[in-house]
Image (cartoon, rainbow, N blue to C red; front, top):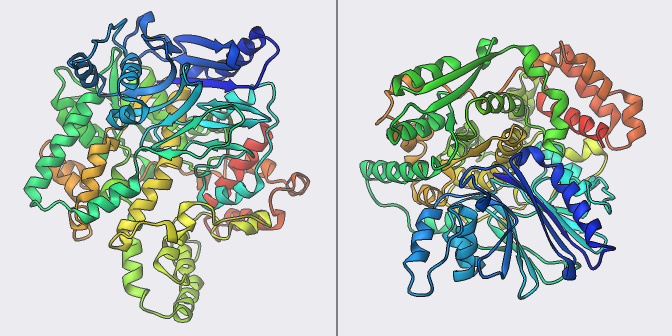
Length: 628
């Protein structure tokens, strides 16, 4: 795991200036790679690459980057890990053509040689991993940017005048001398709608996120080009629907067990200490169980607890850890400790980010980094195997009310709304009942500010996948479509952003074995009843987990991973919130509707409504804006 940065200019004053600029960009990412730093410059082409290294595989200088291929043609800066690099290395060595001459045993060197042998697209299609990289082809003077299939690793890019810039995080782009970052007001509407900024957009005009599973190839720095997919979740979902798994329950569990065991085993490979997050839920418990089944020593596991019982999962995790025999570390966090990280959030997340579970995620990453350098997580299980509550809630709502004319649903929604009495869930139900289609129902269920334009006074909402039903694949049912949209949008742009920024802040690499693409492709071939059955979510994952952990230890209601931020905003965080939501300040800044924001704040303070999600979005934007 590392950080990358670079730029490609039509010209520069001197090599020294170019080196200083790219070094400054890389230095902003020092926490992503505290072990080493490298710079490589092609003076004739105006290209500069920089790399910050967190040493995970091959701790020797042979893993130093930017790395030049043995043939001298390619130079790469790679952030992430290629988990199946030992297999690719053996394949390269067994080929009939000239055998590689290895300098070390890093995955980056193997990735480079694979690109030399097969070309970039064929190599990417062989890679199993999480990664983002910049690859310079010295022979053809082309720059390739690439990102892993699910978007576990970030990559931003854009143009500052005629200079192309790219980096793992926005803060590195801001360090370039030509930076003139402007807030993209239309993108703000997307942020307030979702609570995050969906790819390909960023908070700044002209700066983009490379979408997952794509490459971008440029022949000169001023060229504006569109990303091309080398792997498509849409095609994966449609292929799975067209050719579904036709085995029985036992065969499905056996197949999934084997795929997951293989993925977990590969992701345990490292030359540094490895552990895992453990909440005691289905996904993390299964990952830890498969780790322990393949380890000769107790796996190090980590959980945080809270003094508030409603948010405390530590007891569940402790029981699973005891059964599996892991080396378990636990930290009980006080409200003061949890709130202490809030001032750091704008810097850590680098653009407005409204998921308040960023707070416990930071805390558990901090705990883990005191013991290990690599952790495995259970992320991806909800999206692939039907774990979110809104899958069942949405299906139930549509079955119950979808047959009604819209006018009648609006009447019912109005009656429900009258009885909301401070319940955010009941108020949400009243809102979504009035929506006119299944797609609109999903849109309503997953919205923060459903009418996001109101908080801004203007805005565009129809530019991303969630708002474009015409771009959705023709999957069989409402739940499958919800799972697809979550996998395309919420997973890469919320869940994986949250994990990447939190772990990297502490120089911790976090891996997600459930997001192995072979696991995902199998999951999309499964019939829905193997994922959700008789009100039980993640049914097939549970069948696999039951082989390793007794059912009573993990069968419990889904809690999520949160802290009582809504209550804190009425108590110890009230002063902080008031300072950010000062009406005169809101009016002076000119981004938000002061009357509407203050009205939501007043309703929340009175207890009349719980506006946590809406207000946290606003507070994270305001806090971020103060740092600019």
